[in-house]
Image 1: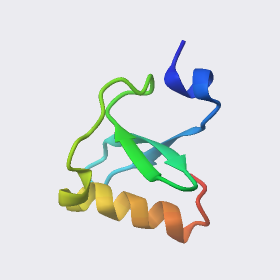
Image 2: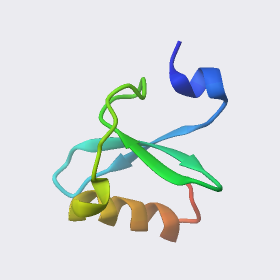
Image 3: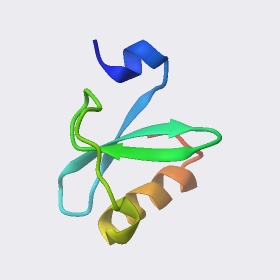
Length: 67
């Protein structure tokens, strides 16, 4: 069972400028957590230092927090 299923949090798949995808769990208080896989097991540390992921987060927020 994936973390999203166990916790009830939705996992969003966000597009990257390079053509890849990143998975994000959004919490209304804690904010985003990014993962490399849909099962939310391989967390991306230091995502705020990667401009491509920051751009995907801005895209997500500009759309009204929907992917």
